Amino acid sequence: MSDDPILRRGRGVIALESKVLGDLSARLDARFTEAVGALVACRGKVVLCGMGKAGIIARKIASTLSSLGTPSFFMHPGEASHGDLGMVNSDDIVIMISNSGESDEVTALIPSVKAIGALLIAITGREKSILAREAKIHLFLGENPEACSLGLAPTSSTTAMLAMGDALAVCVMEQKPAFKEREYAFFHPGGALGKKLLKVGDLMRKGADAPVVGELTTVQEVLFAMTRARAGAAMVVDAGGRLTGFFADGDLRRHLERDASVLGQPVVSCMTRAPKTIPASAYAMEALKKMRDHRIGDLPVLDEAGKPVGMMALKDLASIGLL
Image (cartoon, rainbow, N blue to C red; front, top):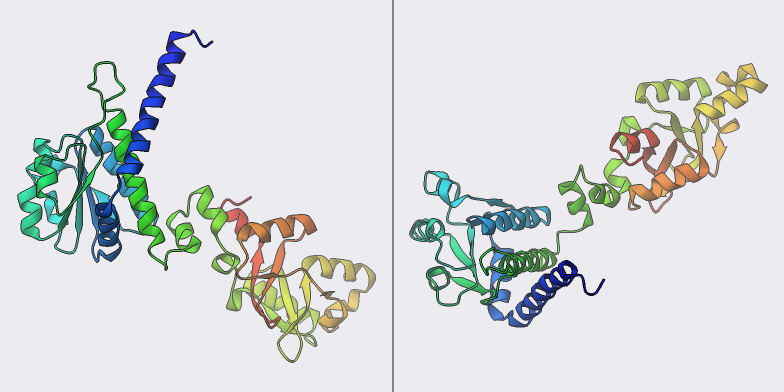
């Protein structure tokens, strides 16, 4: 297989682009740190702009920044010249991407961006270019050879652009202490990653939707409380408000088989003692595993004092696609 010319050529392309990324890593300097600081401090939006293949990379960087907590969007340079610049204001940062730094559609926007007062960051493959010269901060990709045999198709250059954007997005996110896994999950409500990061406290039923009853409450009254809450179970507490038991539909069926008068009895006489519980800080995936392992449909959520703060229902996890 080593003599296969196609395989050899494919490996050559990847090797070249790997070298470009290694060189880019070594080339990062204080300007990168300055750019990260500016993005962290940005009070407005981050606007990505690029033409052609650079525009596709700009869209991806905007998406990554947004998903990691920095509001961003892509602005097509052609549309910007016909009114879309109205989306940019003085609190924003505009990141223009162009390998040559001379793309007409992009450089034509420079005077307007400066007049608006937005901070301009340039990402280019040429140190001495219009865009590099006019930007407040210039991030240099290096004058890298393209992997294409013609030396024309954007390949190595767009790989470097993408890596630079990812480096910016990750560093900006890590400099924002408020951005944690919980925020990432909320920005990805439909994604598998976001769902895995959701916490029990984000999904649990609370208040009237999570019935809590005293030990002396009759089974009939407990059933009424469950019906009002549309819940499959109720949490039973002592006089101090600490969980002492759990009463679910299954408990009712088991006791009715033995004693038809159970409805008038206090719930403490037929509840499940020492039920499985989970804290609000646990991941929803942990709650799912516990419910599956023990074949239960509801799980009390307790605080550090052992008092109920909510209830996790298996059907709620199913409704968001965790099953």
